[in-house]
Length: 440
Ligand SMILES: Nc1nc2c(c(=O)[nH]1)N[C@H]1C(S)=C(S)[C@@H](COP(=O)(O)O)O[C@H]1N2
Ligand SMILES: [Mo]
Image (tube, rainbow, N blue to C red):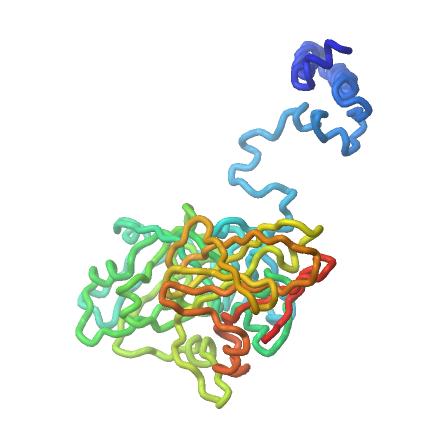
């Protein structure tokens, strides 16, 4: 026994496995079982392996998966997350839409780390379902006020020098259910119409140079190839600034849900303007006033008028830990984390409050701080076990300060469902439970 103890569990297992490998298969299993029971006894005293109890898996015992072979390389030619991560999924709010063809799913923000949204978790918004489009059959037509109208194949587009940028996409309806006081009881639903990917494609300015703009060109109509043939008018100024025509996200081709094989990307602007399954760009001298920019995606004001073309997603932020899905447990030290973003540029600063906005502390910006991208912030918090009201307030490089809900409602009333970027409040109870509350 003393010899076994000195060898340690690993050495002992080598020995057991070595001997077992020389036995016929049916005897081998028994031998391993007995040998491991011995190893457990030798090293850890009472915790004896082989009966499958949890203590078998804990150090200094050696767990079953260390004593056996794993799955081979060809089992999953395209990888997927661990089965233990099965709760990290996009989710829908059943009462929000009548059908899943014209609906929305939400990114599981509480579960994500860093600033990149994995492709399989990017929120989805479609007006007529996901079309299945072969890249060989897909074309992008550019016409209207241009010198040389053209129809590009995917291969044509991919011959242009490409650029890759990390940018967020947010649906302007994000949080829209809360304008009038409805309370979504999960971070996934209060802020989950939000994603941030590395997008690869061609600057639209490069394609416009190729076709040559005619005098009077001032707006561009982007049209999707899906059943909704969704259209949005984009000012030429934006198109020549940072609009991209993209075919890849996070290193691989676009997901069908994100517009495979081609989508428009208007960084920092309403997600709705980033037209997916992009098939047509028409250059004109004025906006088209399509459905998605008149009856929808305009902000109805108290006096019955609507704000026109509110393209930019204003500075916003939210604490992602703790949150309703991720409560605190015992009192003590926690890393409070969150995400901030601005459609106008970089996040300059984020403050956090633990008393509902009376006192503010400056948070640390973590990792990459990129323009029009999610920016992660962090603050070490000593929770004394008492009730607290957690808030974050972001300021971007233009000096814009994220408003309170009261300031926003004073300005815009409560008729709109779009562009709610107010400071968000989580209430932490003594139990550690976190709920969504609205305070002034
Ligand atoms: N062709 C087309 N493009 C579209 C849509 C659509 O239904 N059809 N939905 C828009 C809306 S409202 C949003 S918020 C974003 C969502 O992008 P995502 O599904 O990649 O997250 O795509 C936009 N582009
Ligand atoms: Mo949207």
